[in-house]
Image (tube, rainbow, N blue to C red):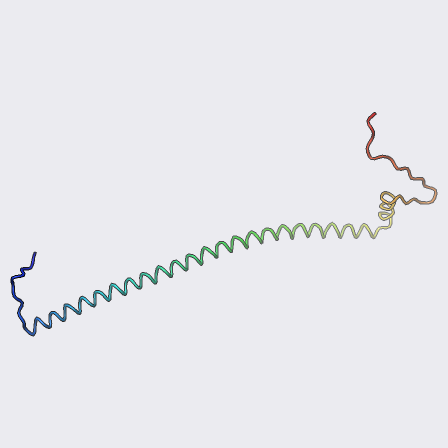
Length: 125
């Protein structure tokens, strides 16, 4: 419905109070919308920052997990190397093994032995 502009407004105390009341209600509504908008912005900023933090933490976790797997592989290889080195130490404590290495690599011989060096590859003619 359209208001008629031809109707005169009564200048009474009640109408003045009603106008003040309506203005307060309008101001309350504006403040409510402003508070809701501020709350919505704060919620969006909070959710955005938490999401960003979560994504960064997931990336960091994936990186650390990859690094952990790499270090586990390295640890396994180092344990195998340690096992091999301990075995070699045990062999090096054996005098016969040392004599065998000296004979094959450095051409040491016992008294009365003659060492012949044979070529590694046979010639094809």
